[in-house]
Image (cartoon, rainbow, N blue to C red; front, side):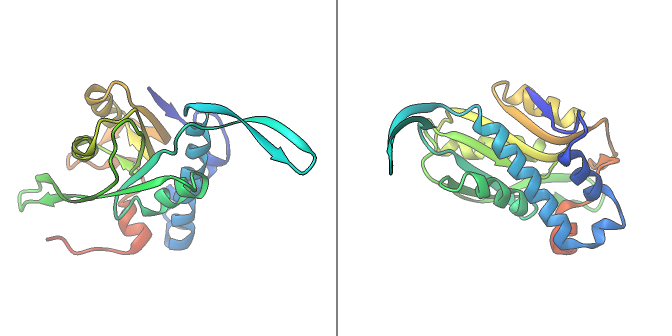
Length: 216
């Protein structure tokens, strides 16, 4: 299931518009903060779907039954573009465990690329609620490989995916690979370019957040 958080006008649709705007993109701090804020909204929505237990707490004047998470989720991201959104999720899931992966496109001279995975750091993921964020869900190939990589550390209890902008085909690719996944998107675009970039999209989220990189 994919949820487009911009289907109705909201703060999210305003933040996504700023992420896309070529003039506002010049402000890296604002770009990172908007990714962070989308992560915060997604965290709130996901929190409604996590399993809770009833507990009784002591207040200064009495006791009160309330609902608390049965367990804390694991919040994962793909370096480096996902770091601001990961922080937004952690701002709300402040007791969560963290997981980090390195996945990138290894480009060839003919313009083609392959997905390279070189690093993972995470706790035991067996029966854990997994939340993974990546700002741009384009072809879906890197995200599918990343999730498969994470699953070598244990089978998740549930899977939530958070992105700022997704392509329609990327969403379909991920849903085909992981039908149980719930995908939370700042917005969803219809088209991919010949080299796998979302159109209209916003460009390269990692470069806009942290500066241009050299390709190896």
